[in-house]
Image (cartoon, rainbow, N blue to C red; front, side):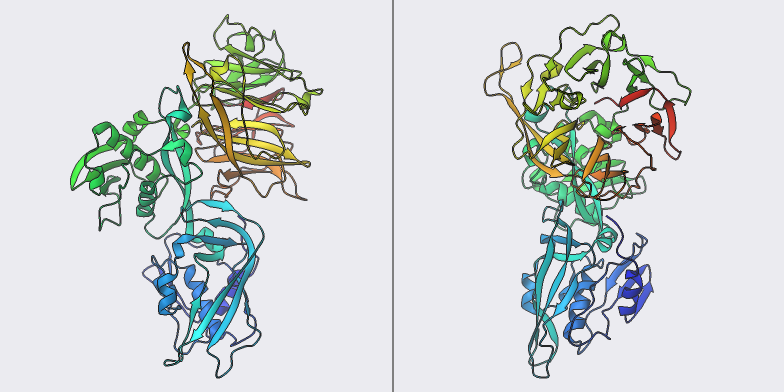
Length: 618
């Protein structure tokens, strides 16, 4: 998201009657100098503020006019009031009972503009209305899940004057809250909660995969307790079909628990209700791992979790114990970075090596040069490689062991040109190999179980366009695709679902299949995506351009939001990008300067001049 239009801070300050600062809290009140009728200016979003400063709105003043009531209410929506108690003071008693702010958060490009009823306020009037308008940017639903949105926003707010007191209050309003994007950035933060890939999703994976499920919580309203409650409520509906939770159904925080705060050793005790009292040690460890993975995304971070139920300790788990329970992609540290050298061989270097590090050909025929390669992928255990021939027609798979051979191609494309043939392949967490055939006459997304056997065509319901690039997440249940349609290339993320019915011999039998469901945009602002890569459990790095803009490199969340992490330093002429899910490793690109990398806190550095197609394992 970008900042609100210039001058919004000055306009907001001009509207405030008083700002009180005491004990780190900022108190805001609606403007008493508002006109009694006609149009109001929109409630522009405030500039980003120190996260330690808490903002509280002021209640309505005596004899406030309708415009001031609406303005004060909208201001109160952007405060840090946990239950919106001040905002409810701008409502009638009945409206306060029926309004449910937790149902959604509508994010607008600027703060909501207000258009007043042209009739104005007369001496004897008892009803008045305003229309809130703006340009949609996104919506956060009742599951706290973010989704990009487009189009115009228009909702009515109705007011009534109490016949006895003579005070104006809002008696009709839309459910949820509405605010500008800068206020949204100040008030909310994105955090991944974690579940486990279900058996149907991970298949033969050696270890359970932890899957990130991003949600937005209010950053200064007890976020740790918010995240635990959200985790216990279960996964978002988009991710739900492919993950499981180890918490028994109905598990919740013990009544009266909270706020949750770690002790001086960064250990958090989580008291649960009686639904969890009968779980065994293994199941409790899984519950604790879910909690620990989730809470490590917050500040202060949590290093250890103790789970209680019925007042008794069930288990406790630290980071090492959680790593033994489930694998996160961001915790996997690759041994090598791989790319294609000037002799069209697959070579490798240590990912954090010095600038003078020489690349070594990988063991086996992929590094021998017998078959010239244009791109490659290496399995996540770094034991197996896959390479696309220089002409893009064939895909080979071979072991990264000295003396190993490739054999016959596992996939062939009949595309007429190199650009209409096979994409760079990608390995998932269970060892399956993915590749797209861009042949316009027969476009296909294919998966090979454990990188061998007959390719299985993947069904992608709702796909509108042709797949140009494929990357599977470390968890094996999410896939990122660059899809071209009408000369525009979009980045989409889909959910992988498998139906596996094995027959003797370990091969998939009749009724087996793989599908990608519910594609959703991850970089809606970009109309031309050049290349992308996973760069964390729930984040990707993407290179592309906006309409009428120049090429840029940025991080995006899988839900289409923009993370708080700053964008990488600019780099011209980027053709391919590679990132490890472990954010400590350098970003790598193939640009007009060859293979380059971006170490943390440094500038882009040239690795080799003559090379292409860099990849980390995956």
